[in-house]
Length: 264
Image (cartoon, rainbow, N blue to C red; front, side):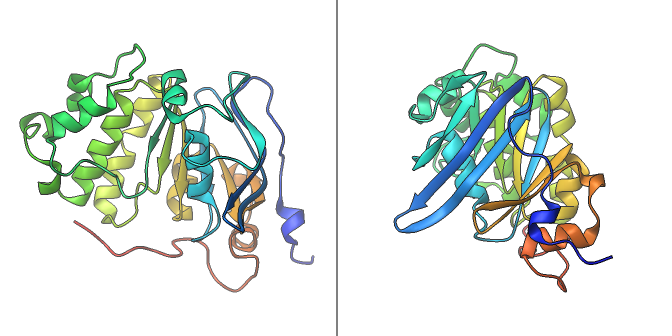
């Protein structure tokens, strides 16, 4: 049997019935560069979808566009059927879309608690208040007066997640949670996801580490040079199919590709 082409390994597509978040035929440019080319994403309430792909695939651009930080050239972004394609980021936050950005982007001179309160500024009503975040991350309560600049990378990532959670989002966008972190720290960070799902939060995460993504997500979608090359449940695809979708060629393993330097 011949090896599948990129087109052969694309599965599904289009908006799912009852989708909470729908991204339809999104095109995004960075200057003359087309960063996303006709990308569609559909996410049901309570679902976890992982966007995988190598550096430069358009993963972070997708999340930032959904959050309102990039303006699409064409296409639509809908939450519960409401078109938010041209809404400012603060309006999307009030409607329930919160982003944990790549690189954490905390205010280094502010304390842990102050960073959380920044996230609560335009919060929706809901269960996630600073005390609830301290329950999720037990170390945080006793160190809530410590400046963010004094925290380790993993601790900063936890604060960045907490800052997004206190907005009480319906959809949580997680951009490269594992980037630069040691495996044990990554395990601890990802360990809170089941509790978020049980609280009714829908999760769209970007991850270079394919093995990590397929462990935590109900569905995966692979981007290559701004296009979707694979979409479906992790168990539906062979390693070779994922490899082809990830790199556009065979002969290099996608699992663990582009592994970042470790940070304790």
